[in-house]
Length: 227
Image 1 (cartoon, rainbow, N blue to C red):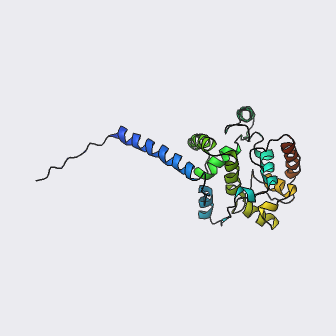
Image 2: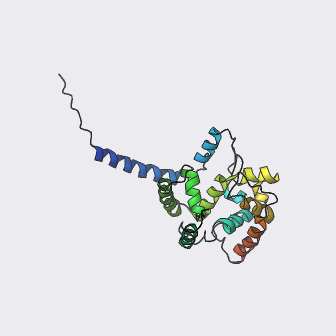
Protein backbone atom coordinates (compact mmCIF):
# COMPACT_ATOMS: atom_id res chain seq x y z
CA UNK A 1 0.00 0.00 0.00
CA UNK A 2 1.37 3.43 -0.90
CA UNK A 3 2.05 5.67 2.05
CA UNK A 4 0.16 8.97 1.95
CA UNK A 5 2.03 11.78 3.65
CA UNK A 6 -0.02 14.73 4.76
CA UNK A 7 1.90 17.94 4.70
CA UNK A 8 1.29 20.28 7.57
CA UNK A 9 0.00 23.71 6.57
CA UNK A 10 2.60 26.30 7.43
CA UNK A 11 1.07 29.82 7.58
CA UNK A 12 4.39 31.65 7.63
CA UNK A 13 5.65 29.75 4.61
CA UNK A 14 2.38 30.48 2.78
CA UNK A 15 2.57 34.19 3.62
CA UNK A 16 6.19 34.27 2.52
CA UNK A 17 5.32 32.64 -0.79
CA UNK A 18 2.53 35.20 -1.35
CA UNK A 19 4.90 38.07 -0.67
CA UNK A 20 7.56 36.70 -3.01
CA UNK A 21 4.90 36.08 -5.64
CA UNK A 22 3.58 39.64 -5.35
CA UNK A 23 7.02 41.19 -5.76
CA UNK A 24 7.80 38.94 -8.73
CA UNK A 25 4.46 39.72 -10.40
CA UNK A 26 4.69 43.49 -9.79
CA UNK A 27 8.25 43.78 -11.09
CA UNK A 28 7.42 41.67 -14.13
CA UNK A 29 4.28 43.68 -14.95
CA UNK A 30 6.16 46.97 -14.68
CA UNK A 31 8.95 45.56 -16.86
CA UNK A 32 6.46 44.43 -19.51
CA UNK A 33 4.67 47.78 -19.63
CA UNK A 34 7.96 49.54 -20.14
CA UNK A 35 7.49 48.49 -23.77
CA UNK A 36 3.90 47.21 -24.15
CA UNK A 37 0.89 49.59 -24.32
CA UNK A 38 -1.56 49.49 -21.44
CA UNK A 39 -4.81 48.16 -22.97
CA UNK A 40 -7.14 48.79 -20.03
CA UNK A 41 -7.07 50.06 -16.43
CA UNK A 42 -9.07 49.24 -13.31
CA UNK A 43 -10.80 52.62 -13.57
CA UNK A 44 -11.97 51.84 -17.10
CA UNK A 45 -13.37 48.51 -15.95
CA UNK A 46 -15.11 50.07 -12.97
CA UNK A 47 -16.71 52.78 -15.09
CA UNK A 48 -17.74 50.16 -17.65
CA UNK A 49 -19.59 48.15 -14.99
CA UNK A 50 -21.38 51.37 -14.04
CA UNK A 51 -22.79 51.66 -17.56
CA UNK A 52 -20.23 54.03 -19.07
CA UNK A 53 -18.53 53.32 -22.37
CA UNK A 54 -14.81 53.27 -23.09
CA UNK A 55 -13.11 55.33 -25.77
CA UNK A 56 -9.40 54.59 -25.42
CA UNK A 57 -6.98 54.96 -28.32
CA UNK A 58 -3.34 54.29 -27.50
CA UNK A 59 -0.81 56.27 -29.53
CA UNK A 60 3.00 56.52 -29.23
CA UNK A 61 4.36 59.49 -27.32
CA UNK A 62 5.68 61.15 -30.45
CA UNK A 63 2.11 61.32 -31.77
CA UNK A 64 1.05 63.46 -28.80
CA UNK A 65 1.71 67.18 -29.08
CA UNK A 66 4.46 68.59 -26.91
CA UNK A 67 1.96 71.32 -26.07
CA UNK A 68 -0.04 68.81 -24.04
CA UNK A 69 3.05 67.45 -22.29
CA UNK A 70 3.99 70.97 -21.28
CA UNK A 71 0.44 71.78 -20.22
CA UNK A 72 0.17 68.80 -17.85
CA UNK A 73 3.58 69.56 -16.39
CA UNK A 74 2.43 73.13 -15.82
CA UNK A 75 -0.87 72.09 -14.25
CA UNK A 76 -0.06 68.83 -12.47
CA UNK A 77 3.64 68.51 -11.72
CA UNK A 78 6.14 71.31 -12.41
CA UNK A 79 9.03 69.25 -11.00
CA UNK A 80 8.26 66.15 -13.06
CA UNK A 81 11.64 66.11 -14.78
CA UNK A 82 13.68 66.57 -11.60
CA UNK A 83 11.98 64.61 -8.82
CA UNK A 84 12.30 60.85 -8.21
CA UNK A 85 8.55 60.28 -8.17
CA UNK A 86 7.57 62.39 -5.17
CA UNK A 87 7.47 66.15 -4.63
CA UNK A 88 8.20 66.41 -0.91
CA UNK A 89 7.66 70.17 -0.79
CA UNK A 90 4.21 69.80 -2.37
CA UNK A 91 3.37 66.98 0.06
CA UNK A 92 4.34 69.07 3.09
CA UNK A 93 2.42 72.05 1.74
CA UNK A 94 -0.68 69.89 1.19
CA UNK A 95 -0.42 68.48 4.73
CA UNK A 96 -0.32 71.97 6.24
CA UNK A 97 -3.31 73.04 4.14
CA UNK A 98 -5.34 69.91 4.90
CA UNK A 99 -4.77 70.32 8.63
CA UNK A 100 -6.87 73.51 8.62
CA UNK A 101 -9.30 72.97 5.73
CA UNK A 102 -12.21 70.55 5.23
CA UNK A 103 -11.70 70.38 1.47
CA UNK A 104 -8.51 68.36 1.05
CA UNK A 105 -5.75 69.15 -1.40
CA UNK A 106 -3.65 66.46 -3.06
CA UNK A 107 0.03 66.48 -3.97
CA UNK A 108 0.33 63.51 -6.32
CA UNK A 109 2.94 63.78 -9.03
CA UNK A 110 2.46 62.60 -12.60
CA UNK A 111 4.48 59.50 -11.68
CA UNK A 112 2.16 58.72 -8.75
CA UNK A 113 -0.93 59.25 -10.89
CA UNK A 114 0.50 56.93 -13.53
CA UNK A 115 1.23 54.21 -10.97
CA UNK A 116 -2.30 54.51 -9.58
CA UNK A 117 -4.03 54.61 -12.97
CA UNK A 118 -2.18 51.67 -14.50
CA UNK A 119 -1.56 49.23 -11.66
CA UNK A 120 -4.08 49.99 -8.90
CA UNK A 121 -7.76 50.31 -8.18
CA UNK A 122 -9.55 53.71 -7.88
CA UNK A 123 -9.95 53.99 -4.12
CA UNK A 124 -8.98 56.43 -1.39
CA UNK A 125 -7.35 54.41 1.35
CA UNK A 126 -4.00 54.11 3.10
CA UNK A 127 -3.59 50.58 1.73
CA UNK A 128 -3.90 51.75 -1.86
CA UNK A 129 -1.67 54.73 -1.11
CA UNK A 130 1.00 52.38 0.17
CA UNK A 131 0.88 50.33 -3.02
CA UNK A 132 0.97 53.59 -5.00
CA UNK A 133 4.25 54.56 -3.33
CA UNK A 134 5.71 51.14 -4.16
CA UNK A 135 4.65 51.19 -7.82
CA UNK A 136 5.81 54.79 -8.19
CA UNK A 137 9.24 53.71 -6.97
CA UNK A 138 9.26 50.88 -9.51
CA UNK A 139 8.30 52.91 -12.58
CA UNK A 140 10.72 55.71 -11.65
CA UNK A 141 13.57 53.19 -11.59
CA UNK A 142 12.47 50.92 -14.45
CA UNK A 143 10.97 53.40 -16.93
CA UNK A 144 12.28 56.61 -18.44
CA UNK A 145 10.53 59.89 -17.70
CA UNK A 146 9.49 59.98 -21.34
CA UNK A 147 7.81 56.57 -20.95
CA UNK A 148 6.03 57.66 -17.77
CA UNK A 149 4.63 60.67 -19.60
CA UNK A 150 3.60 58.52 -22.58
CA UNK A 151 1.70 56.05 -20.38
CA UNK A 152 0.18 58.85 -18.31
CA UNK A 153 -1.19 60.71 -21.33
CA UNK A 154 -2.58 57.48 -22.78
CA UNK A 155 -4.33 56.38 -19.58
CA UNK A 156 -5.82 59.37 -17.80
CA UNK A 157 -9.54 60.10 -17.87
CA UNK A 158 -10.35 63.21 -19.92
CA UNK A 159 -14.12 63.12 -20.18
CA UNK A 160 -17.10 60.80 -19.69
CA UNK A 161 -15.76 57.44 -20.88
CA UNK A 162 -12.84 59.22 -22.59
CA UNK A 163 -9.35 57.93 -21.78
CA UNK A 164 -6.06 59.16 -23.13
CA UNK A 165 -4.91 62.12 -25.19
CA UNK A 166 -5.95 60.80 -28.60
CA UNK A 167 -9.54 59.95 -27.65
CA UNK A 168 -9.85 63.25 -25.74
CA UNK A 169 -8.51 65.31 -28.62
CA UNK A 170 -10.91 63.68 -31.05
CA UNK A 171 -13.83 64.03 -28.63
CA UNK A 172 -13.30 67.66 -27.65
CA UNK A 173 -11.68 69.15 -30.75
CA UNK A 174 -12.23 66.74 -33.64
CA UNK A 175 -8.59 66.11 -34.54
CA UNK A 176 -5.58 64.08 -33.43
CA UNK A 177 -3.54 64.66 -30.29
CA UNK A 178 -0.49 65.32 -32.45
CA UNK A 179 -1.95 68.61 -33.68
CA UNK A 180 -3.19 70.05 -30.36
CA UNK A 181 -2.53 73.78 -30.13
CA UNK A 182 -1.27 75.44 -26.93
CA UNK A 183 -4.74 76.68 -26.13
CA UNK A 184 -6.37 73.28 -26.73
CA UNK A 185 -3.72 71.51 -24.68
CA UNK A 186 -4.28 73.90 -21.79
CA UNK A 187 -8.02 73.29 -21.98
CA UNK A 188 -7.51 69.52 -21.75
CA UNK A 189 -5.14 69.89 -18.81
CA UNK A 190 -7.68 72.12 -17.06
CA UNK A 191 -10.26 69.34 -16.80
CA UNK A 192 -7.96 66.75 -15.21
CA UNK A 193 -8.96 67.43 -11.58
CA UNK A 194 -12.56 66.53 -12.43
CA UNK A 195 -12.90 65.16 -15.99
CA UNK A 196 -16.53 64.12 -15.52
CA UNK A 197 -17.95 67.49 -14.49
CA UNK A 198 -15.57 69.86 -16.27
CA UNK A 199 -15.64 70.65 -19.96
CA UNK A 200 -12.53 71.33 -22.01
CA UNK A 201 -13.96 74.19 -24.02
CA UNK A 202 -14.39 77.49 -22.22
CA UNK A 203 -12.39 76.57 -19.13
CA UNK A 204 -11.34 79.60 -17.08
CA UNK A 205 -8.40 77.68 -15.62
CA UNK A 206 -6.90 77.03 -19.05
CA UNK A 207 -5.58 80.58 -19.46
CA UNK A 208 -3.44 80.26 -16.34
CA UNK A 209 -2.21 76.85 -17.44
CA UNK A 210 -1.24 78.20 -20.88
CA UNK A 211 0.76 80.98 -19.22
CA UNK A 212 2.47 78.50 -16.90
CA UNK A 213 3.23 76.25 -19.88
CA UNK A 214 5.23 79.07 -21.43
CA UNK A 215 7.25 79.24 -18.21
CA UNK A 216 7.80 75.49 -18.45
CA UNK A 217 9.34 75.99 -21.89
CA UNK A 218 11.45 79.02 -20.96
CA UNK A 219 12.90 77.29 -17.90
CA UNK A 220 13.40 73.93 -19.61
CA UNK A 221 11.11 72.11 -17.20
CA UNK A 222 9.92 69.89 -20.05
CA UNK A 223 13.37 68.66 -21.09
CA UNK A 224 12.73 65.03 -20.09
CA UNK A 225 9.37 64.70 -21.88
CA UNK A 226 9.01 67.08 -24.82
CA UNK A 227 10.94 66.60 -28.05
